[in-house]
Figure 1 (spheres, rainbow, N blue to C red):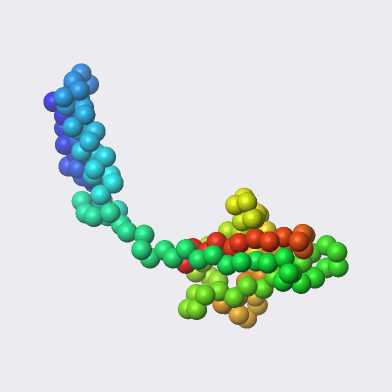
Figure 2: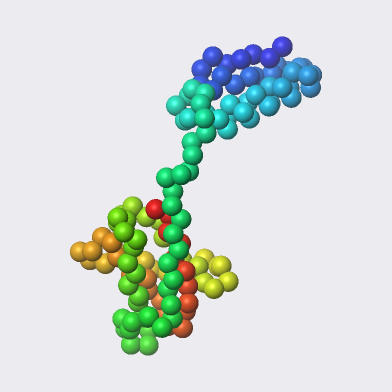
Length: 131
C-alpha cells in the first residue's frame, strides 16, 4: 500500500510490489501536485507568467554605424518606456529565426538603451526581449 509523504508537496510513494491500481493514481496525484504548487511546499494554483512581456525590436541593416572601419558596426536601440537594460533578457535572431550570438552592451549613462555589435553591416535582425 502506498505512503503519503508528510512534508513538501505531500507526494504519494508507492511501495515495492504495489500493482497498477496503486501506481497510476499515485502518479496522477504526484503530477498534479507538482504542476499546481506555488514553490513554497504547499498546494496552490500555478504561477502565471503574466509578468513576462515579450517585446520584439527590429535591427535594420540600414542603421549600422561604423565602430572600426570594415571590421565592426554597431546599432543603438532604445528600450520600451519604463524598461531598463538591467531588467531585460535580450536575444537576437536573424531573418530565418536563428539565434545570433552578437555582443550586446548597455549605452553608458543611459539605462534605457543598448548597443548591438556585429561584423556584418548587411545584417537584418530582430531583438527579442523578455521584460
